[in-house]
Image (cartoon, rainbow, N blue to C red; front, side, top):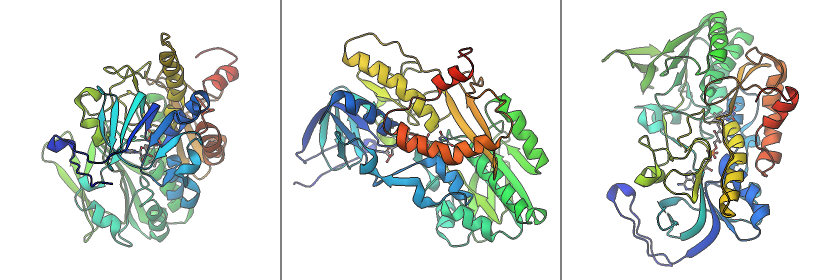
Length: 434
Ligand SMILES: Cc1cc2nc3c(=O)[nH]c(=O)nc-3n(C[C@H](O)[C@H](O)[C@H](O)COP(=O)(O)OP(=O)(O)OC[C@H]3O[C@@H](n4cnc5c(N)ncnc54)[C@H](O)[C@@H]3O)c2cc1C
């Protein structure tokens, strides 16, 4: 095999001297929550050797479990499975990175130089994490006992519970960056679980807890935000809005925050524990192809049908898209049903009619044994499944998050059998409402 010469989009060209040419009916980019569910849905329908999935990862992580690992409630080994075990048997997995998408020629080139042509493409590439964008952060995350941790990566998540267990006194600081992120509730969950841990272990009196977010409110949906603010007051959590972490100084254990509303206003705070949610961005490979993305670099799809706005044989799902809803696996489940319906119709030359309403869900774990189950739509209106007030804390919702949802994910969603709780919601509300 000849050597590959590859340059990224910033240098403007890609050369490949590799000679592997593949083609398929359906090409799925990314084998995460979205890619895996969609591949499973179509695998039974299209039959053998019709689907190719490209993803370089050895393991598929159930990322919602990372929050619980950070709180010592679950273990890292239980959060992932080998990639090949979750992808459908009759699809082909190319263990490689997508380097270039050519939507006009309906072709994709991988980092190793394989060229794959497709009839239909589903883009499910997730978000990129940018720990490197905060000065001093990567160094801090690589030092033992630095007090700096992050639930957002399997690489760093075990540091959270270690830091919490070794915490004696001082400030515990939790951050939310100035970019869209996956699971907008996860930074706050890390804060609540840690607060409860310190309370349970008699360390609360010697600590001060700060939640610092770049956003203008604690949560996008007022129905839940009011309750969350009330809990922060009751638990003496100091909430700072429009504050962005810009630097970590591991030697002096100080974090520098920028006030996003006041120019040149930077404040430094000492920490014993610093939980960082890193800035995130859409994948570079989407940002490289102008006709694929919106001005922010997200895959530009119709918010109802999930079909690409410029390329009708392309659909998108999940975190890498410009859908104006909270980026969660729950949203991916609801999107997967709509995408399946519409892409099936396109393949059969029929009009498309299935519409995604922006359904998303965030199980806001507020401590060991309590959870507020936020569910809402594009209009930030609650779209709750259960006939209880989900803006209150419930043990049942905690059990659902901890024990039932992982099973639902591995056994139903990744096998293509789950399209969100819409039907259950209708039944539990006796057919009334949406
Ligand atoms: C700490 C944390 C807590 C969360 N909590 C919840 C929760 O409680 N509830 C909930 O519903 N959701 C939660 N989420 C969010 C949820 O995990 C994501 O929204 C969901 O996984 C998005 O699915 P996706 O398919 O879009 O992306 P992903 O599942 O991230 O998959 C993207 C895939 O693309 C692959 N990829 C990336 N770049 C390339 C490339 N160039 N070429 C080929 N492959 C590539 C990756 O390897 C990956 O496998 C949480 C996430 C985190 C990190």
